[in-house]
Length: 415
Image 1 (cartoon, rainbow, N blue to C red):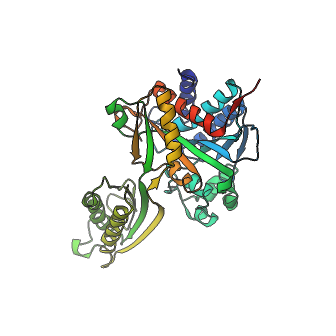
Image 2: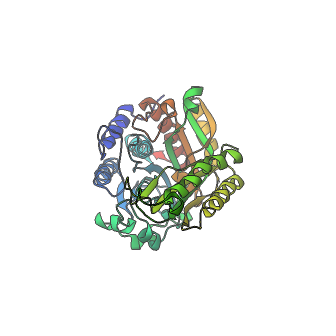
Image 3: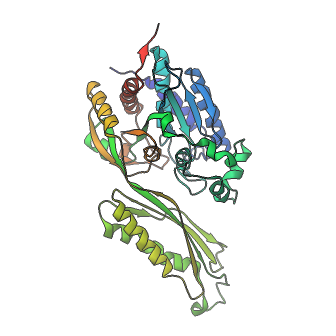
């Protein structure tokens, strides 16, 4: 038996996909952009239509809270993020937001009143595409972000996160008010597309995550000296890009040597002054490192830092920032068992999985009990315009969470 409304799921996702800065070329929706504001208005309207009381916090996260038998009890929170990477897909993040909207609508349609409040959340800035700081919203909720960091973080145009927030009515200086104390949450459950090929290849309906890999991000600045490309002899150059390339070429080797499915990626690079006939004076690039083992994560970080420092000297200077470090996270075994029980009751095939991608769930695990459900990704593709998950598959994942949330919130029907 299915509970979630597949047509409604499709309509939500297709509408959210319209809010993009790159029509026809995937979803580009930065958190505080006009497209982000369009998505915000839509999500708030849908929360209200589901009977939720809606509020926004100081940095722009959206919360919709249900009525409850005992409103003073801690909330069971469900949802995900609604920002995207540049030219990404329509499902990464929004599938989990739509899950929250749909579960709330099902509570309304089935006339369910939870003992513990149901709280739907739509989070900003999970991807880190705007300011180079992934998981920003959930980290702020967990008390791991301060106002100074929001004033320091910059987008590609040089504007700070604080400035971008202020332009749409939010206040970075009040970020401390965003923090949720553990006693205000009973659980957090997220639905996400797998972003990998396993579920599709094995023909399974859902993946139930028990471990999320550790993840860290380095931001590296290498500074040399600009010069004329034609008149500066090769032995008198201080080429920042050449120095950066020595590091970038080694990062993958460090991950392969570590093993245990450890991965490392240089995904963003900026070259200054970026002229075809000018020797690069400065390069800023990122290194994303992930592993299910903390010791392997630390090993690759240290090797990468050492390689960077080896480039220093002879007119080259190096600076390393590490804005994100999250250790491998084991999710709550009790919620995992409940998700498993309801998957089986619904007749859905499933498996336990390790998540190779970072998710807001891993941050929430530091303040409450957490569950994470994956649904299949076609061809394992994500962060790409062709990213796709069948609506029926999302429906199945939502059904599992709906039944689990009914149990955790101790919901009962009313006349």
